Structure formats: structure tokens, C-alpha cells
Length: 388
Image 1 (cartoon, rainbow, N blue to C red):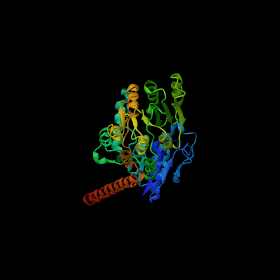
Image 2: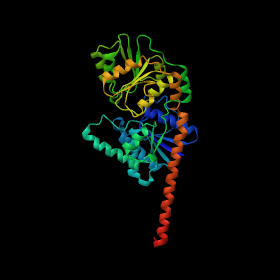
Image 3: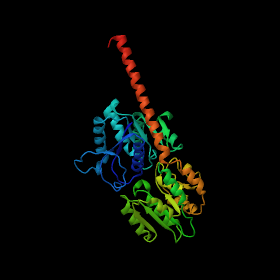
Image 4: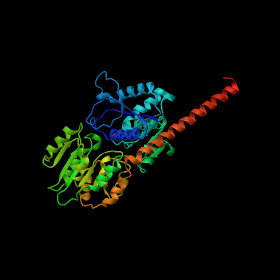
């Protein structure tokens, strides 16, 4: 099977990291995978797997208009190459894939879409929400099949996109390999004993609402507590200003991008998710595998389920620093069942997901083949009946 995957660059991002790991596994299993790469650059370039990367020369730097550039790159790639299926690795790329269907029509290969983020975007102002709803319905109309990352997420996807349940499947997000899951199970996190070391993992972007996390920590942390924030991004200067303003320079630490997040989790006591919206945060899966208690906002349809309704962690409302601070203090006193957490995390593995994705792609190909045969039959009947 010839699979094309659009990827903007090697910059850190959970969507791209998972897509490249899936591609590597599919290639090892005998599929022909082609990565349509917008820019051959980024912090993750050295760790990127050996794959068939296809790039086009950039006329000018394209990082500020990477979506437009990707539309151009993927369009020409699909015109020049035979592709069986396009894998859309996340919500960021749905505009690219929808335009491929509009531009290429029936010549566009079937598109399998992984829904990587919550579709109910609370960050979109109410005057623009009707247009956003329209955009979701356009995706549901033009793209072929959608993957929800958990069972609780599936009804949400069906409702927001206005599609039938048969146009969706559930495949747990492959945040870990089985080997990584086993290693994390052996390197279990430390229990909170006295002072607590809170940790967050994620790009420093508005969606993650790290300002809320700092405010929650400032209000409710005990004197010996610390907060480590792993990740980098455009929000860093604003967050550094908040830390200075709050006088937390010796207690809140921005570490930048970390290659070995799992070692960091092992040395901390509570993972905190402060996001406004998410899909299934990979850091939550890693924390579950390591037995680390979690305090999180209800930033996705799956969060209560991921935390097993209070068994593995504490969830609270989004956008409320007081509520998040209380959840953080509650989580520090949790003693969740580590073996149960690790077993729960094992469903989010590459080995389980890779073959299931290929099965979903094969079904799309079979459906496309059936549609083509039916179209041929209609033309033959018309020719026999009318001589045209």
C-alpha cells in the first residue's frame, strides 16, 4: 500500500512525532510510506526515523505560511505520484486534505483522518463559531474516515462533524511502544513525601494555558513545592514575565525542550495538565505507565475516562486557577494503583495501533474499489440502453 503523510517539519509536536513513528512501523511491515515534508528542519530532525521524505525547494522561507506551502507541496505530489491513501495525522492538516479533495476531485486518494485535538474549540470567539461549525461539517462531508483516539471521544466526533458512526473508528493513540511502556513500568515515579515536585510537559503555546498553571501553583503550592515546565514555544517570554512578577524564579523552572521526558517524570510527583483543549495528551499516557498521579483540566472528552474517574488522578474545569490549584493539592495525596495504571496505559502502544490503522486504510481502498465498479456498471447500463 502506498501511503502519503503530510508533515510540516521536524519541529517538536505530538502529532508529527506519532505520525513518523507510525510511518516507521508501517514501512517495517512492508508498506510504502512517503512523507511529504514542508521544511527539512526542526529540533527533532536528528531523531527522525529513516523514511522516504519528499520535499520541494522553498522559494522563500515558509515557516510563517506553512499550511499554504503544504497545500502546494501535497497537491503537486499527488499529481506526480500514485498514492493509495492519504493519512491526515491531525486536525492541523485537515484544511490541507480537504483542499486536496476539492482540487483533485475523484483523483484524490481516500483520506484517513486522525482527530488529534478536541473539536469543541473554546478558544474561538462566539462571532466566529458558526463559521467554525460550518468548517467542521465541510470536513465531515469531504474527508473519508475519521479516527477517534478513545471510545468516549467517538460520539463527540460524530456530533461535531455531522457524520454517521460508520464513518468513524476508535484507535488508541500510540504514544508509546510496548518496550517503552514496560520500561516506564519498571521506573515508577516517586510518591510525594513532604514537598512536592509538580511537572508539566508540552509546547509553550496558548492552547496549553501555562499561565493558568503558574497562577494555580502560586495560590496553592506549599513553601517547599516546585514546578518544572518542560517544553518551548512562543509563550515563553510571557511566562517568564509572570514567573518574575509572582516572585517564583526559585520555584518555577522552564527547562525548554526535553528529549528525555520520561526521566523527568520519574523524578517528579504529580503531572499537571492545564490545557484549554486537547486530544489525548501523550504526557498523560506516559504518566499512567509510570504510576504518576495526575491533576488535569477537563480539556478533552476523554479526560475523566483517562483518569478513571478519580482513581488515577483528579480532573477539574478548564480556565479556573483556583480549581486547578485545589486539584493539584488533592493529587499530591493520591496513592493510585500503579499496576492498574500501567495496564491501562498499555492500550496506547504503537504495536496495537499500527496494524489497526492499516486495516482501516484497506477498508477505504475496498470501498473506493466498490464505488468505481458500481460507476462502471452504471456507464455500461447507460451505453446498452441508449447507445451512449
